[in-house]
Image (cartoon, rainbow, N blue to C red; front, side, top):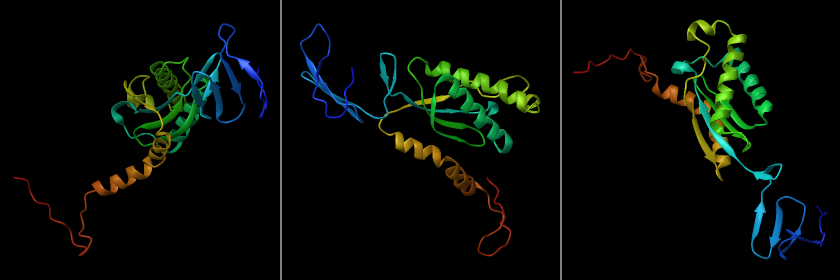
Amino acid sequence: MRYAYGSEKVLPLSKKTSHHARIYIGQPTKIFNTRRCFFMSSDTNSLAHTKWNCKYHIVFAPKYRRQVIYGKIKRDIGVILRQLCERKGVEIIEAEASKNHIHMLVSIPPKLGVSSFVGYLKGKSSLMIFDRHANLKYRYGNRKFWCKGFYVDTVGRNKKVIENYIRNQLQEEIVADQISMEEYLDPFTGEEIKKRRKK
């Protein structure tokens, strides 16, 4: 039974105990009990008989770490991953596709195992990518677009930090590429830089 804001109705928690609780509907829902007090945040999702808040940072890469995720392939991978997540009831909170890997911050229901979900995501997306881009089959030799492993990390209270990290991943990679580029011209004189031989 649920009651509107300001309801002072006292409900028994169970028929066996004499403990009572006041339930107010709202965000965050606050439940008072004579034994304990706890909060359910607005991030909490629910299934039948289950309240959950399971967020994961997942990273996976194409086979051989090839830099193939750009242009039309990048757009298609985004569409495919969104479709597959919707089929399983997984919410994509933040995602970014770099040239050679994918970052995803997702909310996975507890009825799905993380490894089984990532296996499903990588397996089905490989087939769909090869159907849309047949030329990639010749580069990989078989029907496996993604490498075998993946990285996963649970997200607790640092959700905003991970969202910002994923959002700014491309900018950080561009800066890192520019820093690591070898210069052939002296920026001050414009003359060619002579390389020193290593002894």
